Length: 157
Image (cartoon, rainbow, N blue to C red):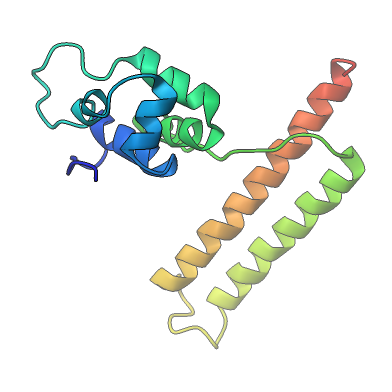
């Protein structure tokens, strides 16, 4: 059981890390600390000295990519951005084809949202906007995979 946390707080990030790892017991075992120490890291009292300690968060994130993704998203939002995990590798030509296909899906969703079949052809409905966000995320991920592959090629990897 995890504590209630303020959305967007570091305690909330740590709660989500524990959830991603299957609970406070797993997080405590992996971090090498007691369950009460992990629970203390989610306490709403921000006047406490120390907190959970970034070293413990770092250790969990190094052991579990899903925990690192939670932390990366938290800090990306604080910096005014987003975090999308990207698996690099593959073939630049195939990556370009994937990027082109993903962009075509963005354009198709845009056309559907502004067609006569839409509830509001002059703007995105909330459902259409949500679908388009997912499509745009796919384009961004495809572009980043291609970028990673091209960077590898440029660096001789």
